Length: 245
Image (cartoon, rainbow, N blue to C red; front, side, top):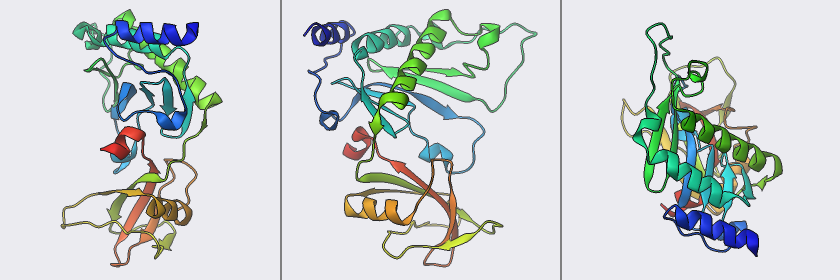
């Protein structure tokens, strides 16, 4: 009882309301905390496919990489910590000396909590130069520790809902597989259309998971679509709030 009361008190102080912890499947639609990465030098389609590193819902359910799910006992404290850091705009501003390196094509680290978003470019790369405030790095470390716990202890997160991302190709030296007939194919609506994003649910999602095997998010496979066009394809599971959108 004390653990539940502490969770409620901690997050209420951050201006949020969390319900009593329950089954992971009961997680409500919107997360109260989201942590992840944007941008960077990545292959086509990766930005659309890349999930948040960690999302935390109002009942304490946490999902890492859209792949593992666990209930965080200290969710209230983590959310309160995030809200305090995100509320100060100075925590997203880097201060570099003239001799410090200028990093190109790095990722933006972002944290959303309490209705606000903090973005820090090349946060970890600039750590040795102390470019960002100590509070920003402390939050980043706390979020990484929580993410590691979810990855280590969490159950597989496998809802019958996926995001399918396809990028067209003109040519390839990779193995080409025929598009499975039981899966809705991606479509490209114009000559300059550079990617297709489809959300599949229920039986359609389950059919795609069976017919489009992959080891992880980085496992992209080349298929010949029913139109004859080539596309490199991968997919991931949709998060609860993405399924509700």
